Length: 46
Image (cartoon, rainbow, N blue to C red; front, top):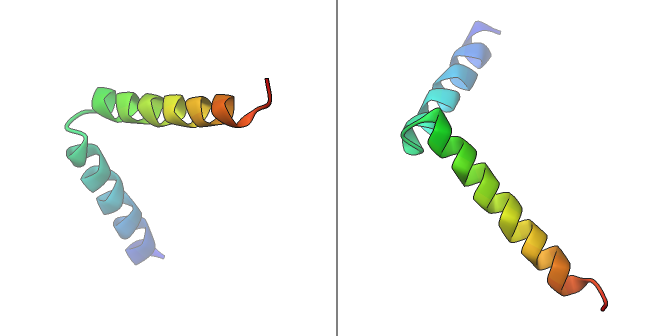
């Protein structure tokens, strides 16, 4: 169980380090949401 928790924590740190900051992570998620929203808008009938 402790190994699983350690892996989860290490993964979270690696993810946040890849985005440089928590703010950067938020911007990445926001950008992904915008992409999904645009795709949904294109897919819906007029």
